[in-house]
Image (tube, rainbow, N blue to C red):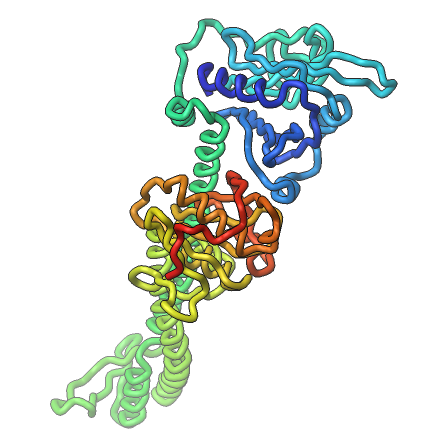
Length: 484
C-alpha cells in the first residue's frame, strides 16, 4: 500500500472511528488481526502484517464468520486485549513520509488510572509490524521481531531505517483504490477477497489435478508390473509344447552341451531343435520342469489377465474423471473439485449451460425493472442448489442479514454492472422472502457468488461469506418487478 492509499484509509478511519472504543480482537492468522471498533454495519479494522503485501483497511463481516475464522489469541494479541480493552480512539494519523499508521488511545490501567497508549501499524514490506506503545511512544510490545533502532521493546518507536528513500511503488490494490477513492476500504476488501478466492481455487484445482495424476501414475505402474510379470512367466503354450516334444522324443533325443536335441513333430518338415536343459536332468525330468512352468504360467496368465482387465477399466474411469476435473477447472466449479479431493464421486459436469427448470424448479423467477433476471430460492435445500449449482461466480447473491430466508441471485450473464435499482429490488425480495418480512426495515447482505462458501457439514441453506455489503430495505415485492 502506497502513501496515497494510506492517506485515504487514514481519513476514512479517522472520520468514522475517532471517539469510539475498541472491542474484541480476533486472531485471524499469525500475522492477521481484526479489531471490533463497535461500528454499525459489521465493519472491523483488518490488519495484515505478512511481509509480502501488508495492509490495513476496513472489512465487512458477520460476527459468527469472524469467530469461526479466528484462532486462539497469541501473546501479542493477549497483551493488546489486556491493555486496550475499551480504550477510546483519540486520533488516527499517518506518520509523515512513512507507511505507518498511528492510533492514539486513551485507556485505563488495572487500577483505573488513565493512560495514553498507541497502536502503531507499520506497513513497510519485510519489516511490517504492529507495536503497542506507551507514553512518548515507548514500545511496550510488538507482534513480530524486527530489527533496528526504535523497533525494540523499551525503545522510543521510530520507523525502520532506510539507506535511501525508495521510489513510491504502486500495487494493483493501490490502482483499485485510486479508481474509487470515495470507498477505499470497500474496494480493498473486494480486491483482497477476490485474491483469496482465486488462491483458494488455484490450490483446490492443483490438489484435484495432482490427486487424479497420482492415481493414474499408480495404476500405470501396477499395469507395467503385471505386464512384466506376464513376460517373466513366459508363454504357457510354448512351455507345454516343449514338454510334449521332450516326452515324444525320449527314445531318440540326445544331448549337445546345455541342450537336448529333439525332433519337432509340430512342424510338417520335422526339423531338429535344441531345448535348453540342466546338464544333470534327464529328458523326462526336463519335460516335467517344462510342464511345471506351463502350469505356473497358465495360472499366472489367468490371474494377471483378470487383474489387468480390472486395472485397465479403472484407468478408463480415471481418464474420464480427469477430463471431468479439467472441465470443472475450466468452469471454475470448486464444489466438484473439492468433492474430487475428498474422494467422493461428484456428478460429472454437464455440457452446456445449467438451466433452472421452467416449472417445479428450485426458485421463483422475477424480472427487475432494468430487465435483469432475479431468482429467489424456495426451501433450504433449494437455496443450496440455487447458490452452488445454478448461480455463476459473477452473479450477485443476497440474503436477509438477521433472519432465515431465501437465497436471492441476480443473474449477470453479460458481466454488466448491476444497476442500483435492481440491487434494491432484489434486496427487497430477499427481505420479503425471509422471516423478517414483518419488519419495517430489514438489512440484506449482498456479494458476488464467488465469495459465498459452504462450510463443511453445514445444514442446508447455511453459508459463509468471504466479503459482503449491506442494504437496508423495505421487505416487499417491488412494483417494477415481474414474476415470470
